[in-house]
Amino acid sequence: MEKLLDDGYDIVLLSRYVKDGEDKRPLLRSLASKYLNLFCKIIFRSKIKDFTSGIFLMKREILNKVSFLGYGHGDFFIEFLYNTEKNGFKIIEIPYIQKRDIDPVKSKSAPNLIKFFYLGIKYIIRVFATLLRNKNYETNNKI
Image (tube, rainbow, N blue to C red; front, top):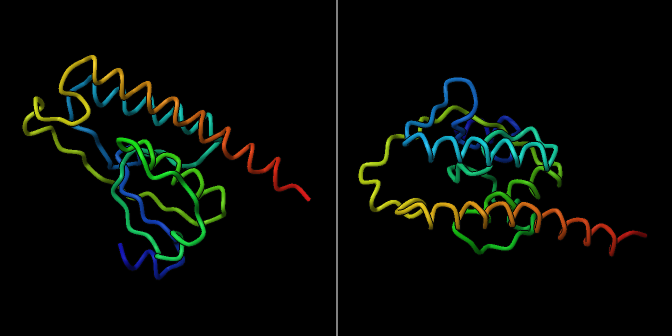
């Protein structure tokens, strides 16, 4: 992965949704993830296929140039990737296989259906909040 950074990419993102990537978690979790990522791709008009992977390697300079609010369950990563791509950094996705949960009861995102849907709604709200923050930033910083 480090070679890809040397070859000019700014972020190497492990992705379940590129060729040879896969998500082996239970059907409900994998479908929810796939559709959330498709939603992000459409709303953000992005090339990124896995906004929720959270597994990546990046150049340190990105942290100095990309702003995002670092709170949330993992939804902050959606905002981080969106802002990184929007700022013109080069992102490459490489295949990753998400293994089946060893103990689904201990899952932080799906210990029960109520929490699962609650977190899903938080992710969707974060997508729209990211768009609004960026729209406000662009409006307030026009010359």
